[in-house]
Image 1 (tube, rainbow, N blue to C red):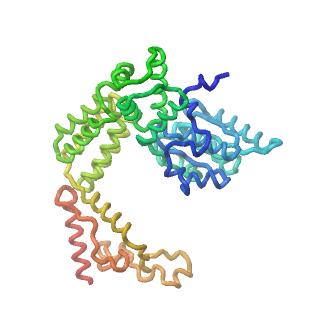
Image 2: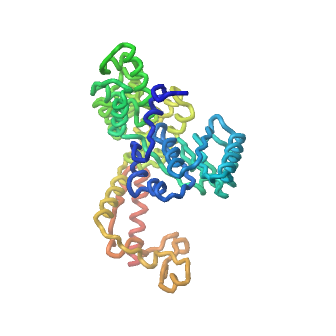
Image 3: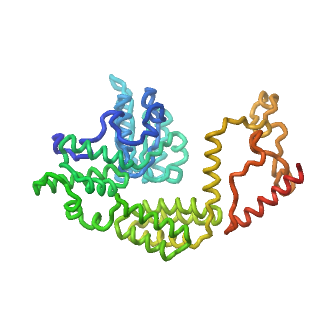
Length: 429
């Protein structure tokens, strides 16, 4: 029997109640979606989508505890239809036993199951034999069958923030699992974890063993670098240097300098930055600084991220480098970024304006009798596919403009198109 003291640190610190969960408050906070699901007393099938080490398995286990359900785990990496069949048999036994009990079947890395394996869950989810919970690091829209996806709510989990990771360090120290840690060393550990609680706890456990062997009372930054070696040596991922370097990369891309962009990109990789983090930042740059001046940039950034996921390091890093260069030389526009922020600011301070009657949907006779949709002009039936003079904003917002295309790249043509449409509108009015 494994005693608590000999359990892995991640298991010893695994939350036993919802209140002990660190992070994911956008789902588990008061009044939030998953918290309401827990409080309802009625489990429902769902898919937990998020990066490694953010609490997917923990939440599934807590759900089983909350509903007093039998908890069955299947690993899609190692399992198959045989495991699904065994889970069905156990669920039937629990349902038909003396003390009827619900069953929750948790499938880790569900995206690794093929279509037929995923389909094997469908009849049992539909019949209510068990509640299905899938965990995935991949976008379920692409990796989970539409039939299964339609029967499960999707919850998006986020990487843990810096303060949340510090809470984990504190909890590990509270149970005496790790010694005192110097502030600089803790900062480096937090940065290295990169939002992954499991990575942080595994690293802490490694350090605790080494510190005990050397009879150290405190983990210093210098000792930390010596013990963990190259993966932490060259790059201060948690400090000012990290944020300065990513800032230099972003500004070099925005400034259309491919050589500087490539230099800062390689500096970050050489220093130990997670290529997945780099991929996320490149996607953001494509959306923020290039936008509709070259819509291909966003697609290329997404493709580069996918290539890295398939190839890993070092092969996949070349795709990211290609993306860096493309983003740097692409025409720049932040028009959509500015328009989005302006629209958000407007809606935040404005009231909830009613939808104009001609834009409302009218699926029932009553709605039609109330003039829902009356007077709406179907643009495809009009000359040039454009209903000149038609209005789409709420009353009182005529002339409002959030999006102002720049005179670069594709937005030159977009600007021309919008000016022509305005001319047609003005003629009609």
